[in-house]
Image (cartoon, rainbow, N blue to C red; front, side, top):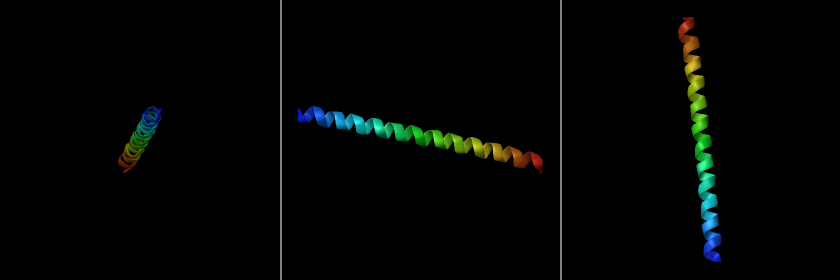
Length: 46
């Protein structure tokens, strides 16, 4: 019984880490998109 509970906790922890990793990747992609847009606006206005 205890082994099953530990395994469930490990899977839950892994799923949480995976979700956090995905959030970080999404945030990084969004920052990159904003940086590209900012670069385009500044480069074309000079």
